[in-house]
Amino acid sequence: MNLILLGAPGSGKGTLAQLLSSELGVPHISPGDILREEVKKDSRLGKMAAPFMEKGELVPDVVMIKLMEQRMDEPDCEHGFILDGFPRTIPQAQQLDQFLSRSNKRIDFAVKFEVSEKCALKRLGGRRICSRCGADFNLYTKPPRKENVCDLCGGKLFQRKDDNEEVIYNRLKVYGEQTLPIEEYYNHQGKLLRINTENSPDMVLKEILEVLEA
Ligand code: ADP
Ligand code: ZN
Image (tube, rainbow, N blue to C red):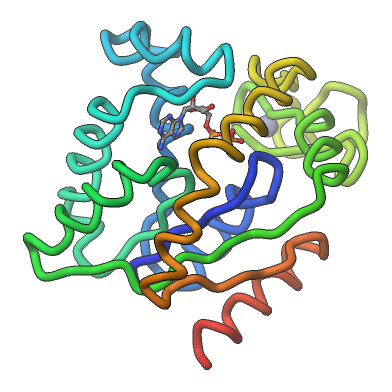
């Protein structure tokens, strides 16, 4: 199963991508995570991408397309994948279709995560991540037992650099301008599934699996 997850920042794509990945047995591919890892390593790609990410702007298409094609060429993608954050522009979507068709593959569904702006802002502003094990917390919906400390490993929690108010607003704006149009791209191909994601992750997972099996 080749899936794309679409939705504004804070729509819960990342959380659901992980659940779907273990449920369906295909890898979860998050360009955001890949880029953050490169920034951490201070690699050439990381140095190039960091200024865009810090402002909430998109990393240029040519870079992203090459990066993701390389990732999808890895053997673990043979029997499917879940793309969480790619494509994000029309050129990325077009290039992805071309790339897949060269190996007789295609996207099965694009799942759109619908969320109110109020809910998205709360999720992004409240997000805290463990610096040691990467576990996700949220001050409003899933607070750690002890302030700033990971429940699982005792690591220190941090806030993503782009989860501050000003950058959050820019990410939402960029989403509306550059990514929203690709919904129509997949709708036109008859592949768009809309899911309301304000319920708990387990309920959203159930709903998506039901739709995919139907
Ligand atoms: P979110 O969806 O919550 O904004 P991500 O972790 O998916 O966060 O992405 C973080 C940042 O990484 C984006 O703001 C952007 O700078 C960059 N990025 C991720 N995916 C893409 C993509 N497909 N094209 C261009 N830039 C991307
Ligand atoms: Zn931890």
